[in-house]
Structure formats: C-alpha cells, structure tokens
Length: 356
Image 1 (cartoon, rainbow, N blue to C red):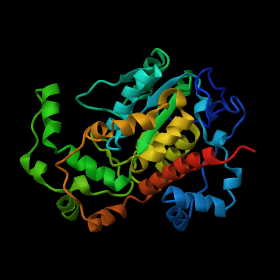
Image 2: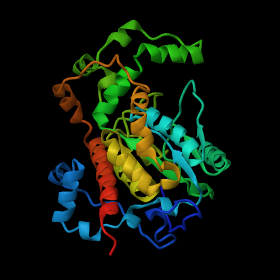
Image 3: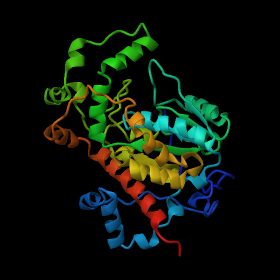
C-alpha cells in the first residue's frame, strides 16, 4: 500500500467556505508550504504553553512576521466539507458531540462512520478512493467523522476538504487506550453490537498498566521501528497524519514523523490539543467559522454533559515514574505532539497581531 503525500499546489478558496473571518483573506494567493525546521530540545521546552510560545516567538523576531493567512489552510479547501479523521482517545467523542450540536446552530449536516466489528484505519488505494468519493457525495456543507489515516482526496482528482483533528500527550493517550479497552461498559456495548464476539481473558482485563510495563508484556513494549498491523494498535498517533503508506507503520520513526508534520502544516486547517481546549476552540472559531462559530459557548455552557462522554471511571492513576519510563521510547511521538501544540499556539497568536 502506498499513499505518497504530494506537495500541494495553490488552491482557491471555495465561495462561502470561510464566512467573514481571516479565512477569506488572500484566497487563491500563491502560498508555499514547507515543514518547520527542527527545534532543538530546549526550544521545544520553551514552547510548552501559549505564554512560552509568545515569548519564544517574540525573542526570535517571529512575532513581527506572523500572519494568520499563512497559517490557514481552510482558504485552500475547494468544498465546504470537514473531514475529521479522528484519532482515538484524544477527546474525539466529546469533540464529535460538539460538532453534532453545532450542526443545528450553524446549519450543516453531520455524518459519522458506522460502528465496525474490526476497524481498519489504513486502507488500500481503492478503498481510499471509495471513502473520498463517498464523502464528496455528501450534501454541502457537511462534516464527516471516521477513525482513519489521513486521506489525500486530490490524489483521486477530487476536491480538497477541510481537514481537522485532535492530538493528546502520547503517553497519556496510550494509558487511556489501555484502560478504555478493559472497561466493563466497553465490552457491554461491543457485545450488544456484535453478540458473537468472545469475552476476553479475565487475567488480561485485570492486569494494570504499571505491571504490564514492568513485566515487559508485548502489549506494553514499545520497541523502536516495530511494525504492528494488529487491529486496535493505536500507539502511533502520527499514523493518523502520516497516511496509509507502509512507511508510516514503524513505531516512533523519523520518516513517519516528518510525513505527519508535513501533512499537518500543509493540509490541516486546525489540529487541536486536548490539554488546551480553550485555545483549540478559539482557533477553530477563527479559522473555520462556517462550522465552529459559537463552539466555545456551546462547549462551556454544556461542559458538564460533554465532559462525561466516554469518561472512564475505571482508569486508575499511573505513577510519573512509569510514565517517564515509557516516554523514553516515545521521543518522535512526543516531538510530533509538541509540533502540533506549537502550530496551534502560532495560529492563535497570529490572530492577535494587529493588521498593518
């Protein structure tokens, strides 16, 4: 399977795609997209939050040249359809419910993939084309949600949609996944949907994450460049941005990292960060207003309901010692997460710069 990401050509914004925000500015202008240069470790630490990012950009002179239009891919989309290829365990259930509620407010249709017995996220080229064609057949404007790798619509001669997604601290994410698939209600829901599914071994259900790591269980062994094609192996957050190609499979690999970063920078309108929903919602409202107008108000006015979605009360705490042990093998995944945070913060700060 191969899905080579082509460097995108300049595209004109579709009429009505971006409302009256910065997304309309410079529509159709030639804009090259190049991956960010690698940040040194101490620089990545400096941009750990919005305040640090501002200080970093100001000290390096980048605040003076920061432009929202150059960080905005919504204007390059050719059709008002959002393709949300949601990463598991990044708050995507809550985010999906937010989109469902905003559909009424902002007058678009909401669509999601059906629950599947075996969820395949990496598709053969013909399946990618089928997916892209199905999405393009939706009424406009629409939102489509599915657990699937980044899919290049233009590769099949189809219009470019508006790509959005979410990320989360990689180690916190795998811990969340570990306990999610062991939660009692998870198997109740699965058995209801697929009655013939066998129940898991009780010993597997009872094993905690710390024991799994310390005993070197294969489920909790994160070997560098290891390839896992098994259903439910979601240790690679980068896979959802890298694409369907085999070069995206090796865990924590430099190649998958660079492809994922390039896709985020050149294709995605917004990649939000679970740990900073305030900034995420603000940026979505600014960069994709046709769909996300009022997102902050809807989320925080109904936060008690939204925060309970998919919440796992069976997840015990995991020590920082174990987390730090696991982080040693997640260097590239952590770098990707930091990259997405930096881009989100740059997008936010760009909207705060007075127009000259």
